[in-house]
Figure 1 (cartoon, one colour):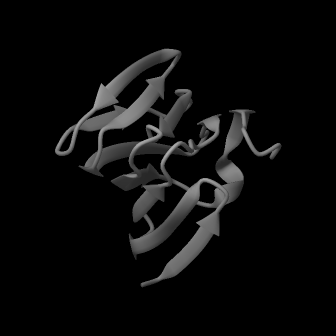
Figure 2 (figure 1 turned 60 degrees about the vertical axis):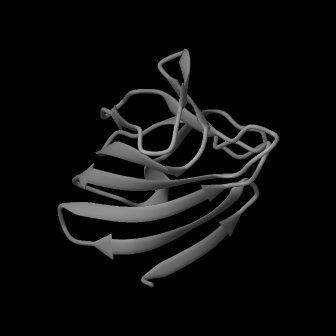
Length: 114
């Protein structure tokens, strides 16, 4: 494991990283959600390992099941949420020019982060 981080909404671990891509396994605790956010230097592809998952993409919310996936372009507002009855696990493949956590522009956050 390259990196593991606990967050207020769950946790993530970096599985693979190169200059062109980074792969994470992300767990969102039951009833929690990530910030509604954008990125300026990376796109993301999410593959649901354990669901259902509630995904918001540019203001449109949809439910994804295990085995579903979704693409998130650079600059597109997005959020992942877990229903109250189960956690969500998904694989995130990031592609772009930079993968640091400081490329997160939070539009809304349940935990008061900027």
